[in-house]
Amino acid sequence: MALLILVIPGLGAALGIKWMRDALFGISDPPFALLCLQFFAGFLLFAAGLAFIGGFVLHHDRKRNKVQTRFQRRRNTR
Image (cartoon, rainbow, N blue to C red; front, side):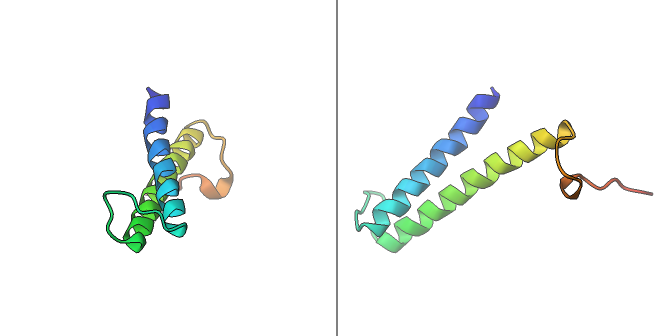
């Protein structure tokens, strides 16, 4: 299940990289009319996939106390 959770955003990020690359080389994909729109959509898809995978790994490592002190959650002192 965890592998599937990581594969779907990874495929989205790969598609985002492809769209950005195609926009730089002037290749338009069917859902986009403008190359700048294609590049922006690819960048958003890549950033979202990367952020999801990074957050998943950070959450996993925080649960097992394998992060540096600056990445540990601060406990509420009240």
